[in-house]
Image 1 (cartoon, rainbow, N blue to C red):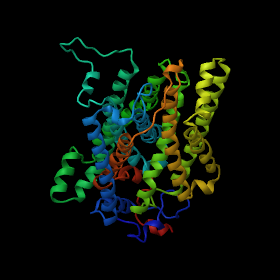
Image 2: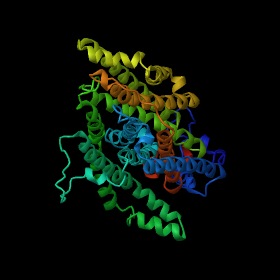
Image 3: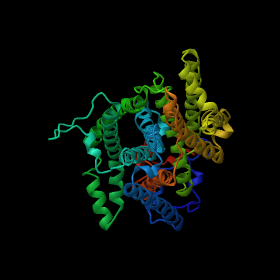
Image 4: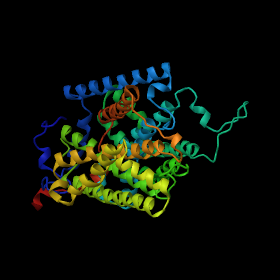
Length: 461
């Protein structure tokens, strides 16, 4: 259903958060959400074509890099970690908000999450899949990443288990596995609803994916236990995965990196950017599918509050970073920190501060928190700021080492820039495909938030 396809949807709302006063019925939920899977409009195909062309450009740039070598990415000593590792850390961070919304808020019984968690979970899975491309791209020789995996071999090669780079392999593969299983388990009752409404080939596909779900009392009891178990397993991963990613830097003897602040600093930044990406995805989806009764002003308000809180925490870490550099009394640490302020990368440092610390302050006002254009602009600024935060950790950090002969500057090339842009296209094409194949809003959990249907309910009004 495209925007404007239903003239009644906007007159119904789950929360009464300012959109309307009448809650949708069970029948409305089934009809409105299953209708999102109807044949796409020309607008949808237009966006898919644009994203596919962008992705093709990224793939072409990657092919050039494979053919001519990693020098096409502009990486030189000392900055062998540049745009690719920046984007890898960025995408891993994006994947955190989905699990936070779906698992942690579920354990705390936050009922407002029901309309937005499905899209957030999908975002998590696709973000981690996108992040997983970058270690392979960064290697140059993309056919050798299996060397990172510990396995017996005749060359007596064995991964260095003391390296955080190896810890990444275990942490991210575990996180991806749990996220995919958690995502699929939550989908099973909804896929069964699609199966019951579909005919022909679609019915057979959904029937296979529904795993024989009939909605019996026994199945529901097992389902609730399994879902709670996966939520409990996923919760510590939210903290541990990005802590491990932060140790890639904190374990290295590089000025500005060897800090105990990095783990909480990375985790907070990951959640901050993930919430912004959730809004960037959900706001157009809400408009396109006319999901106003389900994604209400209350949801937008709560998401904006979470962005504001995580922004304030992140700003505190920025202040701590400067204080530690000054209070340490270590001249090289101070020089490394001041290089970010006034060096060749200083414009990106100040852009990061504006996007991450200044622009979210507008959310102190409720009017801004429920104003869709403001929400969208600030969310995009946060994503830009968080990508540059990762860039400002890696590139300026490596540009100024302990000795002057290790100093150097990195300049992006068309090839690595196009690969980075292509990664965004890869992420968005996965999400666009998802919203037309599976329910982007949970049918089951949304129904749990509305009043039970009763006979002669109309007589009460």
